[in-house]
Length: 118
Image (tube, rainbow, N blue to C red; front, side, top):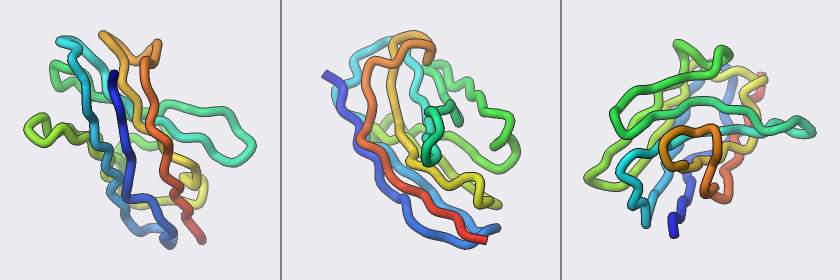
């Protein structure tokens, strides 16, 4: 059973940076997708970034050029470096894992709150 635990959320000013971390345990998929999603207040969850078992990355249009997803397989960690943060990035951020691709998520973390003030 895969377990994911996020950390690194907090409150920052517009233009500042944060790095989210996700500790991944129990991932035995040979082919997988690790993703970051976010859910702003009173809004549905949306995809932010993903990295697959081949190292290919993808990003949502609103974060391209500002966010970077990476994985440290030796440490079983997933990261999301967020630069040039904007108030509209305020949300609870979740990491997730899926077998093959991120269209169907198999497990979610508990979420970490990011608040960006102007």
